[in-house]
Length: 240
Length: 240
Image 1: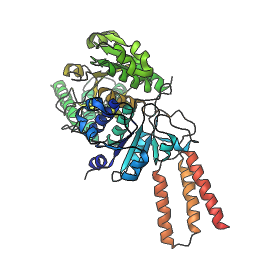
Image 2 (image 1 turned 45 degrees about the vertical axis):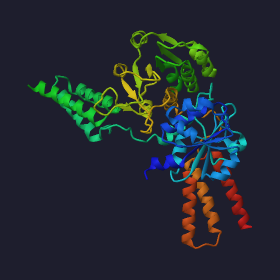
Image 3 (image 1 turned 135 degrees about the vertical axis):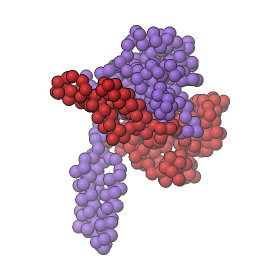
Image 4 (image 1 turned 30 degrees about the vertical axis):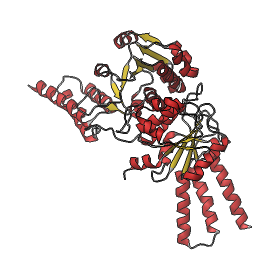
């Protein structure tokens, strides 16, 4: 089974005491955008139509959500291998229950074969110190100090994105141009430069600048192919 | 001026024809979470109370938003250096207006001193091919193929996060344990292992496993210090 399938199957998303049904829907949609499917709600508000409406095409996740009355009851019944807390209020090095990992560190640390449950908690107050104390690790998103408290489903979307970010786009032919192809493009330009009447040191600078600019630009193999074709035609025209 | 201050000042966020006031508020909040301040609205819906309500502490961004009736009018007046489009429908290599960069590639490509404007467009239909054609680059978030269309403000939060992700947490003492400190911890454990009566090959395996497990765990200098203190006491007690 490929790694993303394992992650989708093994990760659980736990929303502790959601206060507004819309946020349950927004969370479900963000989960489904990244292929997550296991939603667990602890002592939720009434879900009402709003949760299903905001979930859009992820209604099924809300319908299939597992509900427990307490976090301890969830842990006892589902026995997660790893419990990950999230907080918008990370602690310094003396507050050992709130030492934050970045989402990218969580992504590196997750074992796709383990049942990892990620806790998001309460729109107003977040997770308690006791709840974070139950977790194996605590994740926080680096934000601006002026206004660090994020919308809970925005935070969740960012964490899901980090976990799945290496996934390929579902499009054809988007592999990056290889180093060899990039070199061939520069060679083509160098030939063109040699056909222009400029002093050698300016030619060298021009070559370097072309290499810098194209080197900085991500591009697909096909884009590179197109550029090379254009340069070759320019060169041939100059030689006529 | 430090790099994040430059980015905050120079990046503009453009919401093209927002259809629901709540989303303008959600977008403003996500912007402020990452220190962004320049919101531009193209032909927006009426903002109503909902936009200000969902913005929470980012009401000022909604109040200060610059409004234009068309994207062309915005470009003519504000003259951005780089225009970045976003799409949930990336194209393959033949659709050159929709060749997607990942958010992390955008983050690498942004020059903090340039005025980079990022376009988000229409909850229902996204940005048009013509609008994407005006852009210098197009960004897309890799999602699950079953349900790729994200909530627009979730997508925005992820892109802002990537641009600012290297920012430090606003907490004391969270620097990672250095390689030297990690080595000292392993040395401490090795001494303890030498005090236990086990065969040499098992001792070697145990040392390696301890090194593996602690090596995989991100930890702060202070956490490492605490662990070392504990091991030293254990060792001293064993020597009594």
